[in-house]
Image 1: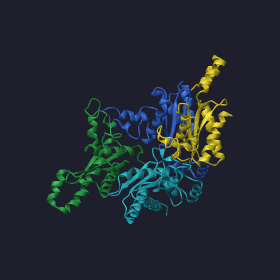
Image 2: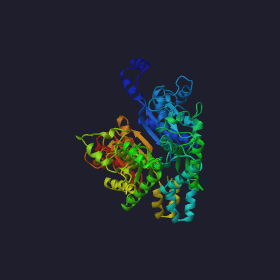
Image 3: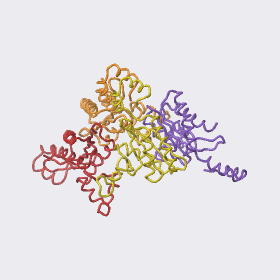
Image 4: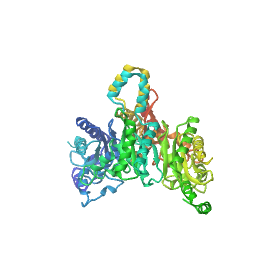
Length: 158
Length: 158
Length: 158
Length: 158
């Protein structure tokens, strides 16, 4: 997706940049694998077994790995976290704070075929801040899930 | 899953044990029926009518019985409890404590085609502690469901 | 379900029989297990590994077993065959002949959450011909599936 | 799951043991990635863009990649092909020949939440012939899908 700000910028830089924006607007398999590799490294550092998924800006699955001995229940959760993060372009945990009883987005989890709104889903941004996809991680305490997802996302934004 | 301890043991005992290990890696129908029989006995002792399911480590149904006059609404719950217990290798009731409003796994029930996170789902372990499947029980108060599930699981771990 | 004919009959026989009719109108767990045991015996005789399910007259699952090494893809098929057989009170294979392209029930498989209309699903009848449930078998060639289902059903009607 | 250290230990015990261990095993992430890498290489050789999935023996997703510019409609098809292949321990294309109108398994695709029965799903076997999972490929003509799936599977069986 190319946003208005970007179009303004593009018009300044010229046609050559167009192509680059086009590429930058959606995560490549190579980028997805870099993110997953960084996430797996973090998971090992934390001594955890994780399910890790990456989706593109269209919320469609780009890559997935389940580490050996990771929960099979986390396959779907990892994918739903990544989808939830890109669907609203925000960390899943932030949505979860708004979906509690009495809060503005109460039970938003019923939408989109099922959302997961606790931590572990994080948008993936380029170095220039553009969102190109999202990563979802599940397999341990949510603090670990979030740390692993952030490590994955950070590998492409730093 | 084959753990390191087991291999050490196997190397001491030899080829005969191998067959037993092969069986231990996933629940057999004979084991599932022993667990169900123990669960039914416990259900009768408690004067309850239960739906009882057993799944393997891949969360696929291995065996199921619905006692006469047990709720038909408990068919799906018993199966979902067994699936939930194996998906995260833990008692369903423990997940349910973490999925309450404000807790870390709020609304995790939306994943995996629907989880049941109140008591009554219990992983089934061998005498050596290896998880080989799970049992799910529904049909009465959750305390009874849990007691019957535990009786079923205990029949294979003691 | 208690039908009108049955009620007429019941009124002739008296109150004591009422209880027996109540049981006869829907398969008991004991009956389901007899049928499954007969089906497993037939499956072994044919040197096959089967998934076998029994549903009651309400199409709700009563009992299920998956023999060791039987296909996991046959779990759902065995259950759907039993459901299909009771939903229309006929052998699944007969429905399958009518659901072919150009035939009266073309693509009826899209109804009821998915039907399976090839052989292997058979209504279960009492000795007096009353339908009390159905058995569904999957795991081999459809001829074997059907033979095993018939053996299971026959154990209660002979 | 059998890990590398374990295999070293097992190799001390003997070849007979290997085969028996093989029964207890399930595809590792390392094996899944080898299969996917071989599949991607074949896809490039054929000048195609593919979605490639690997599932374990319980039909649970182990790894997935979508090559850049591959169809997003093929994500689900690649996963369903892998699932179909492991559910019945056979190539999807062989099931598809039996599920045609008038054939024994007509409309089997309605089972198991949706099967895909045209070529591109292949069981993954070890060198000793044991099935440890399956690979599903979608993104081109089915002949190419099948060739890529076979290349992926062959990387672990040769």
